Image (cartoon, rainbow, N blue to C red):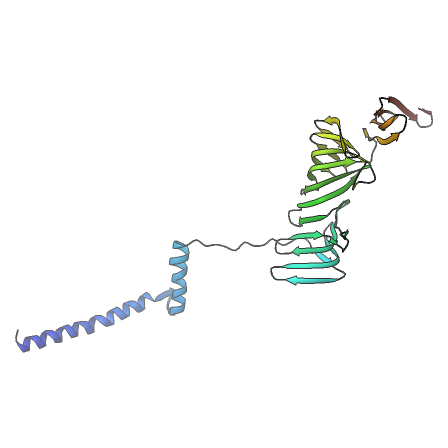
Length: 313
């Protein structure tokens, strides 16, 4: 190839490159343009990058995870303490010295209360002094029902909780349990519970040992297998299930016996039985005694009364 032809070829290639580059630049600018309201607008590089990230990466290639919206409580939580209130990261608040928390109809008081408002939970417990005596145990009240506990963990939203060593007065007796679960409808589910009419409910002289029980405050208690315990001695008196009705109205129900220690008859149970509410005019009470030395008694008593006409027993 002669020098003249070589120079001509080089000039032609340079001319072609110069013609092609402007077209590519214009094409790139067109790709960066958009139409808005019929008028061409130019998208800045930053806006373009954000649009391409949303379209290509988020919508097609990856999964969009939306943050879970926390449901607010239905009412404000009012709390106070006599000693101090300490706040921590993560929504924790520690109440020291006769802490109190009120939410709707729920009232909780204890020596130490820890709240986590992010999860709407509260934990309360007492404290032990130098002699090992525990004071300031939690007292939990839901409406008209009150529970004395050793420790409690409660959720304001679900209205459920776990209770350690709960004591609740139902009717003329006390229902206690080592570990109990509180349901949303104010019922208690417990294992290894007790039912007694003895005033010393922390260490009763006699009680029914309940393997499993469901307590509906001021209504009834339904249990699984239960057996009688007197002075910490289990007796061979057991039932496969039991039902205790609680009512302030006129109704039938069991009469818990009284524990006696007689020198002549021995150790025994007295005046235990069942009360029959036959009608508004008449009732019937069946009671009995039993002692370790073999003596026993059965008694029957009825009362009748019609206003302004007659009455008797």
